[in-house]
Length: 433
Image 1 (cartoon, rainbow, N blue to C red):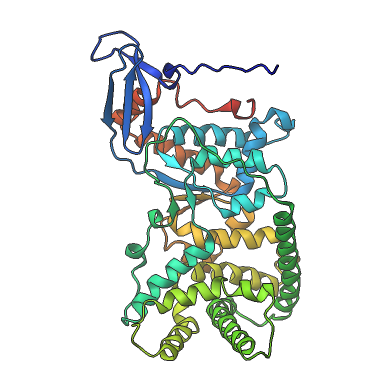
Image 2 (image 1 turned 180 degrees about the horizontal axis):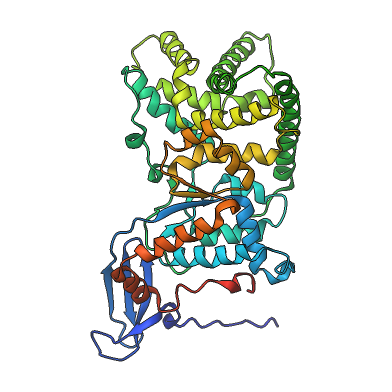
C-alpha cells in the first residue's frame, strides 16, 4: 500500500520579520510583514490575525545597466560551486555587494535585457539568469527591435507634422520597461525555470557565425578605404538602416505579388519574413497616416521617410552610426588590426538602444574607449547617462556611494521598518541553496 505524505501549512509561515507590537491585541513581537506589493505594505498579527495596510512613499530609482561580463564575473565571485572565486578580480565581489545592497534599499534597479539572456545561452545559463534577476527583480527592457520601432514611430509622428521630435519628452525609461521601476519590491523573486531548447542555441550560434563572417568581409572593405573621413563613414552607416528596412519591405511585397500570381512558392523562411522588423515597423508607421488616403501614397510617404536623412537624428541610429563610424575610421587608418568580434556587434546594439534611458551604464574597456572617441563622445554627451568601465571603476563606486548617501534618513528608516534591519546585507548565499 502506497503511503501518503501530509504537509501541514501554518499560515504563520507567511508572516515574516520585522515584528512589532500588535496595535490591536498589544502582543509584543507579533505584528509582522505579510505582503509588500507596489506602493503598499500589509502587516498581520500572528496571534489575533489583525491585518493593516500601510502606504509606502513614492520612489525614483536610478536605472543602472550592467554589461554581461559584469554579471558573469559577479556570479563567479560568489559561486563556490564553480570553484573560480579565487581567480576572479575582487572588484567584482565589491560590485555585487554594493549593487545588491542598493537594489534592496530601493535606490536603484538594474534591468535585465534580451542581451543578457542571449549571451547566457552558451554557458552557465541558469546561474547567470539567477544573478541578473537578483538585481533586476523582474524589471526588463523591451527588446531592441521594439525600442527602435517606438523611436521611429515618435519621430514619424513629428515628421508628418513637419516638426522636430522632442526626444526628452516623447519617450522615457518607463515607456520601455516591463514592470514598474518604482515599485517597492516583494521579498521573493518569482522566476520561471524554462528549459533551453538546443535548437535555439544552434540558431543563436549560426547567427553569430553569420555576423562574424559579414564582419570579416566589411573589415577588408574598410581597410582599403584609407581616404575616407570619420563623417563619411558615419553618413554611409546612418543611411543604411532606413534604406535597408525600406528595400527589404519592397522585396517582400514583390515576393508576395509573385506568389499570388503563381510565379513563386513561398518558403517557411519567406513567410516568417512577413512578421519581421521591416513589416512590423512599416505597418506601424502606416497607422499614423489617414485611413481614407490612397494606400500607395501612404506607403510612398513611409518609404520616403525611411530613406531620408531625418533618420540620422533618431537616437538609436545616431549612436549606432557614431560608434561604427569610429571603428570603421580606426580600421581605415590602421588603428585596428583585427575585425571586430561578435561581442562588439552585441555591445553596440545594446548601447545604442538602451543607453539613452539609463542613469548609468557599466561596459567593457573597448566600448568605453569608443564612447570616449572625440566625435562619438559628442553624441553620448547629448544624454544624461554616466559611462563606467574598469577604466574608471573607482568613479563608479563613488557614484554608487553618492546614491546611498543622498537617501534621506526617513527613506532608510522606512526600508528597515518594511524589510528588517539586516535587509541590506548582500545575498552571498545565493548559490548555496
